[in-house]
Length: 74
Image (cartoon, rainbow, N blue to C red; front, top):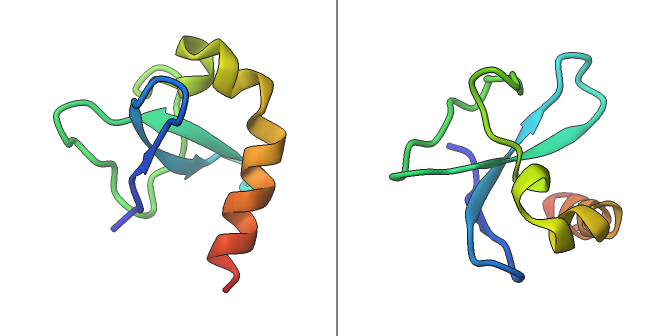
């Protein structure tokens, strides 16, 4: 099961989905606890990127990804 994160700027819940090329992660908003499957990839037609709806998160996304990546490596 994917880990659910909470945006510190707006409190929206999101999960990280890989892009189709598997090189990046996109924060995908979770509504009504509908969590995507572990192997699902980001599809902008089906998923809502949190970076579109939270300007502050979009601004600091690269820094956040480093923190999340380091936490997952532990």
